[in-house]
Length: 87
Image (spheres, rainbow, N blue to C red):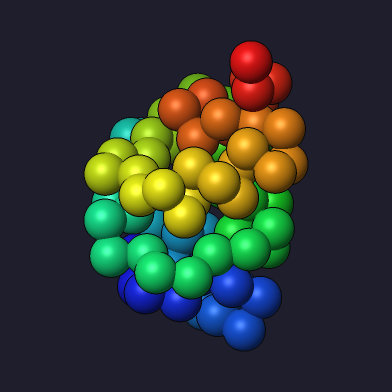
């Protein structure tokens, strides 16, 4: 994933995730290089996780920095399981 995962980059990210999800059964999103993130990224991940689940596939986030953790927490979610509520 690139440094900018905000609404400005979401269209490109959506295309990349959709294309990769179409060609694999296990999609791993490496978040180590993400510097900026907002709710658009959280929505994209939740949507992609739902699509993956409906297709009997799996989406996993790895190397999740504090900025991404914070965005998910503000949405009341956890990046380890996008459908799980934060504790």
